[in-house]
Length: 367
Image (cartoon, rainbow, N blue to C red):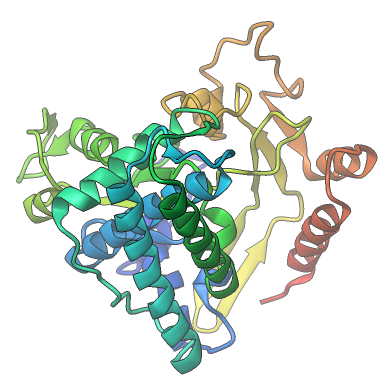
């Protein structure tokens, strides 16, 4: 039942394209079919709709590749010459090199043949035990700080370090989202049709991803109340059961932080009044929403550190360790953000100018 001040937020028959995360993802992923000037990989973190079998497979490949990158980054960044990192073994390093090498070869062919191609057809058939070993190594690396090299054979280690650095350099050259792939392999999980931050979680290991999705309640076949979800051993099993109505997206591990500690997002309202002709109205006063607590990659389970939704942060009890960023529910005007960014020495001038120019462009658009 709509309240007196509410308006219907969808067009009949088209609401999923605008108001579900899965619908928005499908629209953005297919935009290259409409115009060759736009490739979603160049402006939005990649994401996968887990209700679709082919995207479950593509996500698993991407997750494994990111784990392999974590392993190679740790290896190439280890200090000393005595052997392999404490978390690694020669077998894990070899499997990680094979995974990254396979993807790099596919990326090279893609750039040469069709830069806008979306087909992720680079699958390397490693033994499942090798894949799980790479995943486990990446999980342990994400939970520890820098470590020295210990044990192993010096010549083999140095050869693998050189190979790792060469492959990572090729990834930087060929992959538009290389800057997103940090050293923690973090993904954000979102129910496709929920709002107000409900059900959203952040995870960096495979078991946590499965556990988060399966533990958030599953609708009964008749669409009734939620029930406790059974345990699933794979995303494929979740997808086949109809329980994986989720979108998983690469998490920005190094976001711009206000005062060097607080994550934020920008809320800009748009009103679509017609599709044919297309008529879009943009609100001229975007505003900033902060998380309730300081950003940290060591506490992924804390919604206060990672979600900026007002529906979430308004429930937080402010204390001396997590002061609010403003008098009005952890919110700023966009003008106040720009003023802060320009006055502070913490931020790169190019980033600040780019943000300002981007929002100015939006404010001038008449669609």
